[in-house]
Each structure stands twice: as structure tokens, then as C-alpha cells.
Amino acid sequence: MHLFDHDISNFTGDGPPLKGSITPNWSINGNPHGGYLMAVLASAVFRQSRYPHLKILTANFISRCSPGEARIHLEHMGASTQFDWWQASLRQGEEEKIRALATLMKEDENTAEKYYEHSPPEVPSIDTCVAFPQMPGYTFFGQMEVRLAPDCAGWMTGDLGGKSELRGWVRFREDRPFDMLGVLLAADAFPPAIFPRQGMAAWVPTLELSVNIRNPATTPWLKCVFCSNYLNNGMVEEDGTVWDESGELIAISRQIAQFRK
Image (cartoon, rainbow, N blue to C red; front, side):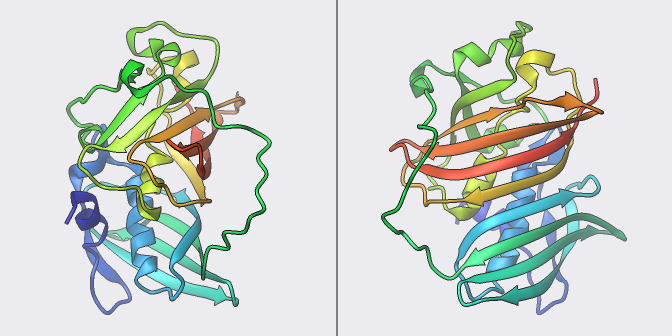
């Protein structure tokens, strides 16, 4: 079993609640990675829902999680002939840490109708992109390889640009394909898109992250672009698209974060 699959599926029990642990294997500066936490909740929902396709997951990050014991509470909100809705709550001690809403679909429609206003982003080849370094406390990047386009990687050495945008590639370092749960990692894999303009000396905790999965990924690398356009009142948004190497749209994301120097 791949480490990711083990770490998102260790919550067991007849419930409610399901009991398990948040591992330290997917951390950013010692804090569990948001996409990993979303995958933990989605995995628990999958085991209860009769519909197999995760289409939308929106998570509100109420309080900071830490590695260790946790509980998951699930609530079935309703179903139609095509969709199934669930609410999932992650708790540690007496605190609720995350509350998420999941929309699952009975089957992918795979109709011939397709129309994109925007083409897949232009991203340099993987070999010419800059590998994001592995650092103590950032175990996420020991599991996931992230490569940034050179023209938006200067902030890592103090060369700030004029655009809050990150483009690049991501894959599992171990040989694991991107399924619906893995795509949740990809949608939150890059550093905050505001770093190229503001520098990395900022605190940018996620308040809410929504990932809309459109198509199954068929390639080991995923191509991503994330951008931020509006920073005010201590908040910043980040819009993202995730594509596979064949140019197929895999997911769309919208993240709201707090910003402090």
C-alpha cells in the first residue's frame, strides 16, 4: 500500500465517530497539509457513500490541526438520482478543526459536449523547471515533487516579481497515479501564489478551500497554475486549475487565506 493510501484510510470503527490519527508525513512547517486533511475526510466519506465519484469538496479550516489522534464525524445530508451530499467534521480533543461538504456523483456523464474559454496553460518542460527544495519540517515535499516555472520561482532567492502567479508541475515521488483523492493534494501542492510578489516572509493560513474535480488524470505529472489577484483586509484568494500532460482539465480550485507579514 502506498504511504498516502495508508495515511488517509487509518480511521476505523463502526462510528460515529471514526477514530484514527493524523500522521506527520504530509506537513508544511510541522502543520498537516490542507490537501492531505481534505483527502482524509473524503476517504471517510467514500467508505459510507454509495456513489463513487467525488466531484466537489469544500473545507473550512476552523482551527489548526496537529499530528496525532483525531475523530471524524459524518452526516448524510441527502441524495438524488445522480448526486450524494455529505458533511464531514475532523476533531481533535474537544475542538472541531475542519468541517467539509462533499458532493459525490453516481457516474461520470462523459458526454461529448465540451467547451473551454481558456486553453491549457503554457508551462515550461519539466526538466527546465525549478525543483522546490526539501526542508526540515516540510515532509510534504518529501512525498510530492513540485517543480516551478523559472519565471515565477525567483522569490525563492529574494527576486520578487510583479505578478502573484505560480505555474509548474507536481507528481508523487513514489509511483502512485493521481486518483480523485490524490488530486486534492495537487490542488494545494504549491506554495501560496502571492509569494512571487510579496515574498515568503508571510503567514498565509487557509480559511477555506474548494476543489471541483472534472476529469480523471491519466498521466503521472500534473500541470498547475495558481494566481491571486486581490489582497485586502488581511485576506487573499487563490484560483487554480490542474491539468494532466495530455492537456485535459482535471480540477478547478478556489482558496481563501489570511495574509499577514
